[in-house]
Length: 445
Image 1 (tube, rainbow, N blue to C red):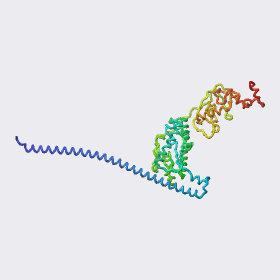
Image 2 (image 1 turned 120 degrees about the vertical axis):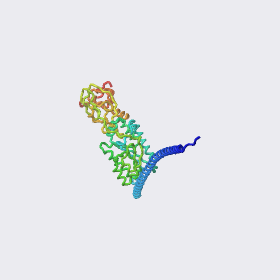
Image 3 (image 1 turned 30 degrees about the horizontal axis):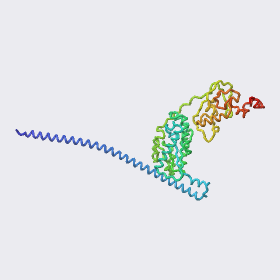
Image 4 (image 1 turned 135 degrees about the horizontal axis):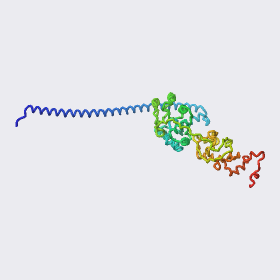
């Protein structure tokens, strides 16, 4: 067999060298690609850790500022208590001394909620009284959990107050315009919230753009300065409405008492710079701000056909027309808006509720001097009906046929002889100077 030529040997060597070179270059490119991918992953991981580190530093800085605020507030509080103690020692320790009363004050935990800014969730509002009670309970629970985590030391009996400030008319229009609840459900919700505790208050600030803000500002300025106040919880003002108040409290080293109720609202940058502690309560209040689109007013209810114009006389209707051809059925009304002052009887309300509106149908319409706007519970409606039965029907009193018949809310017509027997002047005041004897009128007795 002939030996390979020199050319063939050289060609084979070059082929082997090129093959090794191609394999090496392929491996190098693959390794470079893997390294580049790994570098990208490490850069992403590094950025994540840097962000986490920055967040931790920012949180630590906020906690540091919050602790400084609380320490300054506590020092201010201790100084105030020392001043009170000095005054207390200088005065006789009698039970009626104002210094004794101030020194014996219980620690205060107060909460102010801007009800037009922080609107309770629809799940609470639509359930009326029970929803109001649950909202008060859940808010109290959130605050109690925060205080337990903060390890707030309370000596003596704690006094916990919640005050809900709102513009009732504007808030009701907003709720009705968004179909969140009815007027009756809203009124019942407020009753349930207020009755959850004697220290849970509802304040209608009335109309005006800044009516609620003014009251909340005064509330903050007053209660944060009390030495016995440990914490003041605030729901609202994340748009910067209370920044001037916050600045004033910061100068007095009182911001350490403030805790924010953090709902779905994003606080403004100025608010975040205060580094105040907060409680997440996203499930308690609505997540979106509702538009203010009030519904147009409903139709005006005119008097029923056949009923003339009536005037009032001592709380009873006094018909002016003798033509009454129709009768109406008894209809139960619960009213729409205002809450009854439970410390006063129904006839002492201002104005008193209209008997005809709630028990029958009021024929006076918008001109009635009695109120159609009270929210009456079933018990109050029953009391109103009982009180109405104590008065005679003015139609019969004036010698006219009652258009309501047996459905009349006043005392029964032909079955009230004992009532009329005790008050005969109601029947015979038009007969002259002499009032007939009972035997002359009812000889069968």
